[in-house]
Image (cartoon, rainbow, N blue to C red; front, side):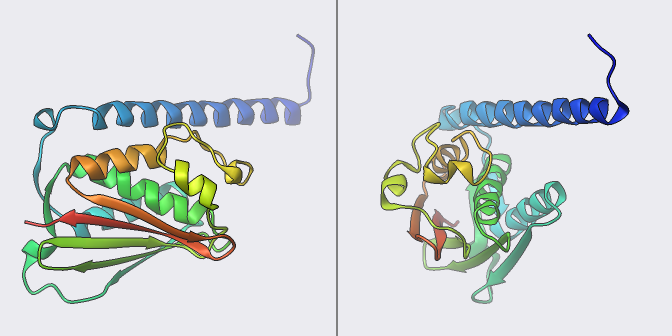
Length: 196
């Protein structure tokens, strides 16, 4: 209602833009959570290569966050593409991988996610690791609870949607997700998915 300086107007506009980005991120998270709750027969599944999905997820994360670093490591050579190919929904899997990479980067000082991919007779294993602040045992017990924000909530923004969404997506693909973490030492998310 009163006259302001150009800097004050600029600050107000920047605040409005940041607020709108947060609202968009929240809405996207809620929509993805709803998609992950569809019946399996309602979700389009096709053969998807995990290495390509991880590269897509890496690109999305680094485009949105130029300061983040993502290192992708293949522990062994795949002589047959089937050991890194799964039957899945590429959009949902990429969303899950983006969430895991962003969590690594958000909660580590060097803003880096280390991704290792390996495979066994019937499944592929992907480890998403960081050297960050870690997760307490109490928070680990609630990590996949929708809208739960742990002790680290003051460390970075969030809504408590990402990890519950990620677990739903991995479960939808007949996979498993586990977390190993030590306070002050870092966190590793291990995702196991059946390959074709």
